[in-house]
Image (cartoon, rainbow, N blue to C red; front, side, top):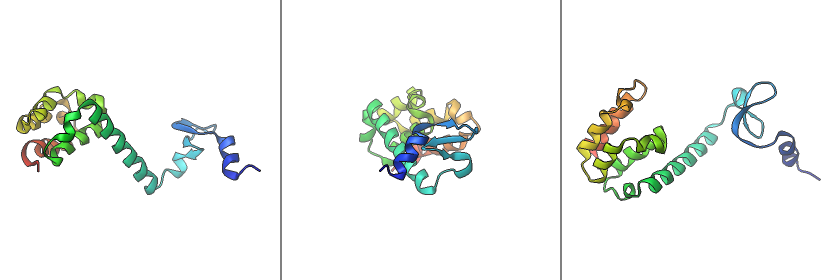
Length: 139
């Protein structure tokens, strides 16, 4: 006999990206109506941790030197930016990354501020904080 879970999975299907169901509701997974039900705090936390693991792997592949930076606080600047911008967006910060790689953290912080990222109203506060963390505070 088929389990309830197997039966529902067979009827609903599994979709790993959001889609509109037959009623137009934003849905994901096995029929999870995101508009009506959203996700739980536990589910959000699980997704967040998975996203952090994925982002760290992307950074470590693209910029293997980041893991050996002597300051966790400064490494976290790079990881934070990668989380926010994606690895492609982070890699656009060529001068900041070059300065961080050579240990010139004041210049690296200044390069964060000398960017569209810092001029954008949505990310300005974050950029200012990260520039200070990179160039001034460190560990």
